Image (cartoon, rainbow, N blue to C red; front, side, top):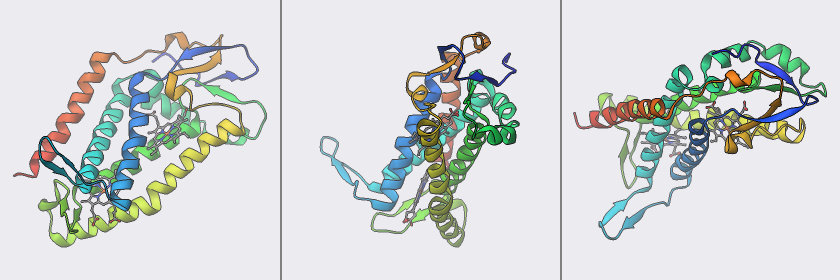
Length: 251
Ligand code: HEM
Ligand code: HEM
């Protein structure tokens, strides 16, 4: 990675639209939003049971929960691998470099000049680590959880532990969501809106079109992107890990 100066300018300079976020980061982000909402909906509100008439299969609410939860795990594993081997803008190395400037960044945040960054700004870099970690804890604890409702559901690893421990983890799974995940996602969305409304810096649009407005003079041309072949390889690894976990249910 050749990008050393993480802060590369401010909004007063002449700007160009530069490709920054690859399709994999953008897809993962919006899929995470959909799947986390689906997990929340199926767990807290329910009522998504339906029948596929042609196959005469009944899809039960909590099965959708497990499916979306496991899909979240695939995305998280992929994102972690992508942070090591993928594009520069989403690399963990670049994020750590950015996060190191957190305190000076925050103390300058109230100034009118808006600092621009190629990838995540220091606050964004820290929030990404936090979001990935809290979601990992949420989804991993689900693997050991169990539901004793009308349609009983079990995480694929729940039978490796005692019923008491599984119930304890299930309670943890619920509380972690209620007290930690909702809080972290709430701050995340509020921060994005703060940048949009107060700092007049739209960080959301680049997550759709991949492009950020950056100073023409910045050395973003050296930014490297992970190839499609690499992305598919890493996705296959993530998918294989989850398939192995699902199959452990039948051991
Ligand atoms: C369940 C909901 C959400 C989750 C789990 C989530 C998760 C994440 C993650 C993991 C990243 C890091 C991207 C990466 O490098 O891989 C990210 C970035 C981002 N998210 Fe979300 N997100 C959610 C909802 C939203 C919503 C609703 C918005 C818009 C209002 C939003 C705006 C952003 C922005 C602007 C960034 C990029 C920040 C930057 O440029 O540093 N997110 N989000
Ligand atoms: C980020 C992903 C996830 C979120 C946000 C989430 C959220 C939740 C929430 C809020 C509940 C509590 C429902 C209630 O109040 O009764 C719950 C229950 C449950 N979750 Fe998850 N979950 C996720 C991932 C998973 C995964 C990956 C699995 C297993 C593969 C799983 C298995 C379960 C089970 C078995 C229950 C039933 C507990 C019960 O209702 O007694 N979850 N989940």
